[in-house]
Length: 196
Image (cartoon, rainbow, N blue to C red):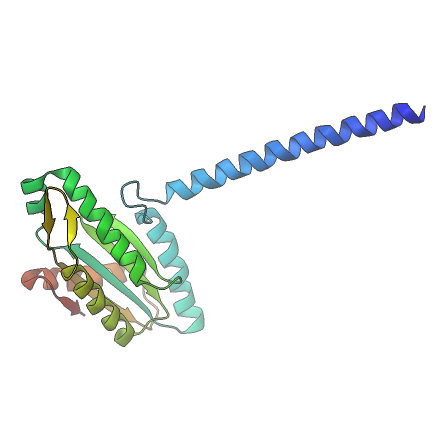
């Protein structure tokens, strides 16, 4: 009789072990799936969907903790010429390399996303205008000084950056609109940083 109960107990433990393994497997797969939803396939950076979620959280912190937030909109100057002259595969390599430059230049608390096409956005929580200005200028110089090794040529490129810093409660769309306005002004001269 004891052997029978031991056998039943052992069988139940195996069943629960198998259930646990299956549960862990599906949890892992689900986590990968969710993570991939928020990643840009080409650059590996976060995408616009993640941008919205991240910025919403940061703006809540701006309201509750009274901290600043800065937003940089980064656009590759004359990117269409790269695609037209060297092809879209070279353009893709350039986008990946720009993504790496941006990602390596930020803090762990910041967020870089591929906004779309040749545009990127950088959210800088708890960052005032002075710090955002230094970072934006460093990004601009890093790109301008980088040799984009894109066979068949080594390319020199520049970026225009529009930026805004706020420490007041603001709506997400207003912040984006202001950064876009600054980017538009920067694109008029190119290879520059404009703050509004």
